[in-house]
Length: 154
Image 1 (cartoon, helix red, strand yellow):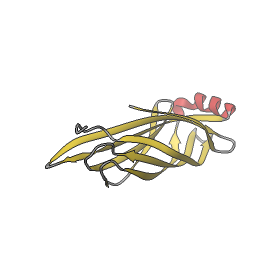
Image 2: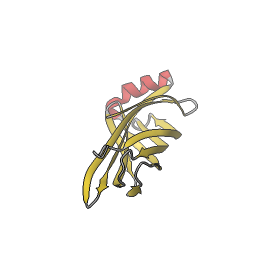
Image 3: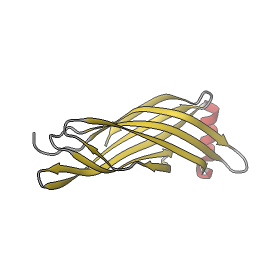
Image 4: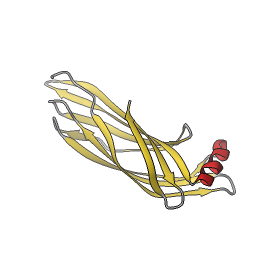
């Protein structure tokens, strides 16, 4: 009951603002996503987090990431953190054949990883805490909506 546990992270909303593939002059993507993450502190002690990092990848390669500012979470409470990820002209030369195949199918798979690092305030001590959740997100290229997503904690 008093032993500290990692915060629980859930991606509660992913809104795709746009995905624009470019074939010429070189294969690249423009991506914009709005992500809302719920951070839940299950402990009886407050949580100060230093950073919340959301990264996005395609076919196992990281495309980019966004950092949030530090924050505070009371004991046994939840908080929502919003992040907007904007990636322009991401080079995907290594995966051009996969991109063409995904565009022909009408869906592009992305990987997202969300990680939080912080300290749990236990009396006069600060105990390091971290949490991580990974998601596979499938984006419809025709109407730029999320078709399917699978999330799991790590």
